[in-house]
Image (tube, rainbow, N blue to C red):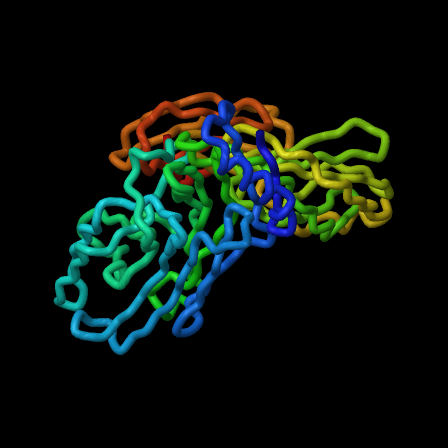
Length: 402
């Protein structure tokens, strides 16, 4: 069973959750998914900010997210307290890594931390069960993460090897007597004050719990692809219009559909880092409607949003229809797939080349469709993608994650 909920609706299934807790021989997995809307955020804007989160709907706190900082200097001898972490209470626990082994130098001083436990970064579909280590306290960022981006060795700190704002899973466990219930949360760490070289917020997006006792849940299991909210239409000319939407985390790409009312839908796929796109080839002085939906990383599609409407400019303004030109080609990667979209129909084929960081050719393929998705069977790492088109070349560094 899967339910989509928001905090306002948690009480609607809290009674059911309590009932499931009392059942010791539940046969079928019951995954309850909760979309936190709006997302919860904990900031390091003062000595301490905290968030109490009740994940099972019984009006009792299960997790407390904490954030604070203090600096007297940025050297090893200074009093520096940097902390973004989560605490499990009332028997709740967080999956953590082995103790940090981060050792690096900064300003001729040696930093090391062998005691802090870090919330384990779990890829999608990782089993969360009794094979993981659980503790009542775990860190996302700690004092010795201070300059982890310059670390000379791998570390478990959430700022090591990841860009700020990257969404990841953590695992957790609830307990009722001998019964254990496993779940996941999606969180990200953000940095909004560049003059302070530490993350400044924890963002908690959503979570899910398997209410079958002592049963695994996969990271991301139960996640429902959430519809994207359209924000409206911006610039509109005689033959194109720009439409906007609210970004969503965990999206592989967006699909925008548009038509004249009552006509056939045309669709356009858009990169996940975009919040707008230009709809080309429209008829002047004509009404249009458009919708958008999310394509999530697990391959599922959300519902389409409610329709938005606009009217193209009068045909007499045709001569002014030359401003606000977007990129003709969009090239990006997500997981182990490369996406290539052309604004206009492809009349001549292009060639895609993928090189590793040593300059070795890993893939060569012909691109002859307007919308393309290539699944790559190459190791995780950084690569250079080069698209050779009849009108010029496009090169980008991409990250591939299997």
